[in-house]
Image (tube, one colour):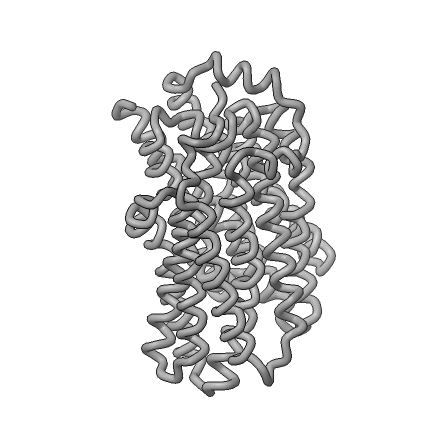
Amino acid sequence: MGTRGRWALVFICIALSFGSFADEAAQVNFALRLADDTASVSILLAAGLIGGILSGPLAPVILQRIGPRQTIPAVFLLQAILIAAASLANQFWSYIVVSMALGSTGSLLWAAIMVAIPSYANDERYIDRVNRITQSVRNMGYVGGPALGGVLYGMVDRSRGLLLLALLVLVAAPVTSLCFKALGSFSQKSDQASTQTEQKGRLDLLGLFRTAGVIRAVAPLLMTVVLTSTLNVLLIFRVRTELQFSAEIYGLVISALSVGLIVGPVLFAGLFARRGDAAGASIAASLIGAGILWLALSDAAWTIMCATFLIGSANGIQNALTASFMMKAIDPQRRVNLMPAYLFCIQTSVFLGFLSAGMISTAHVSMALMIVGVATAIIGACGIALNVNNRPSMVTKGA
């Protein structure tokens, strides 16, 4: 790929960061407006997760009809309209509806990205490189978006803050559209045409798990996601309630986790991938378990920060390597059906994890964290054994 293609990818990543930042910022802005009612905030967060799950059956149909290159700018445009509408409505119900819609469009966005990335790659190394950068950009949105939402909520008029977010997402739509046009000359049009004509546009969970090697690679990730999703809920009780640390210390702990999520895919994923993407992801799962166990047994702030950095880094690595495996392993003619199915499984696992966390008593946080840590480490070790020889070169790739 020449200089033009590289610059196009750079601007696509910038546009994706705009969209990712604004999406998360909007959710935080809504939550701050409803902060007086904890039940409303819980409904808001649940609405986003449910929206992501509900997008699963719709994503293959949309991707098949208009293609991933057209879907991504369309999602940005729709998100801009939704955020702007919420700023004008300024009602509880509007925040819930928009939160669910943002969750749904966000899931559709990343399904389209996972379908689009392999179509522009000439070899597996290039898939790895672009995917790792994209995963870090996505994680930057999770980290910087809430901060941006809080700043805009506090510094400008509430409605104007949402309108600024809408404008930010709106800018991303034409930028990505132009950049995909620039990349179009590098993709193989014949392959894309055959992909569009042969796919039926349906969520194919059965086909996903029947694909050779996929269930061995994905099962450890899904079980890890269920377990580690409880961490997001339990961490605040561990730091603030059990250890009686200040809000500033809790902020530093979350920052260490966030930094790990950003740097893990770019800096460390290559080391783990030497054993193969699937086995490397399982090694990362074992490290997540070790980090959670370390967190449960630590009483000093600096050791807890180290533990959360390890958890964040390993989590980012696991997500990046599993995504790379899926991009290489799935037949190009089936990506439109199977990639959304993969993301649907992840979204459902996250939701189950949050539900499970609500059943844990705050009096048993440390014990729960130790159980989660040990279970995650065991799952990772089993995944390593199952995936030692599970490499994409041994899985059907299609045309």
